[in-house]
Length: 107
Length: 116
Image 1 (tube, rainbow over the protein chains, first blue to last red):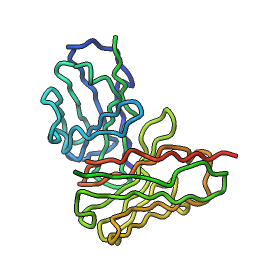
Image 2 (cartoon, rainbow over the protein chains, first blue to last red):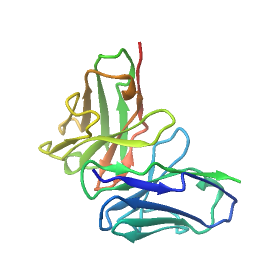
Image 3 (cartoon, each protein chain N blue to C red):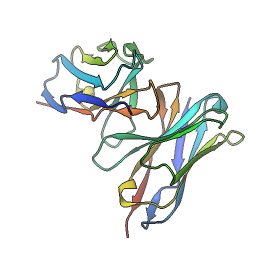
């Protein structure tokens, strides 16, 4: 199975800050990497697929990069509605696997 | 508009069984693989199982293999997860998700609690 490791597990930031979350796969997954956002009590929401492609309707302050084993999710200027938990997920093979999540909290 | 609506969760004793359902609408159901993903209280996301659009290809997580069966009825646009020999560690919110191949749409989830 492919293990996905996210860092940090949490971070405290202010509105307007730039946020960077990293995700590392235990083996190469090309660009078969997705990012999701989850708010309390809600289902996850798809943000990015193919490592860097934004889902329709996702604000352009979100961006993704990377390929192979190392990936990054960046929020260029954090907005109040962005406080949430973010997960990466590989879809290179089954079983699909998720990172442990990064909780973005208000400083 | 794509909608996924899970049902069937509840409280069940260890060793018991439960069948979850996911009613889909707003897309051509038979064209897409569908997965179940679960989330234990306060924990992260865990993929459980997937079934291809025609039902012919199925995969399971090791944690549920041999205890769960995924299947679908394309005539009813419904996905199912039959869960047997339930354990306390199966306690979670269970989401169904459309695969394209990322999980682009999710249901609201149904809570399964395994406890005596």
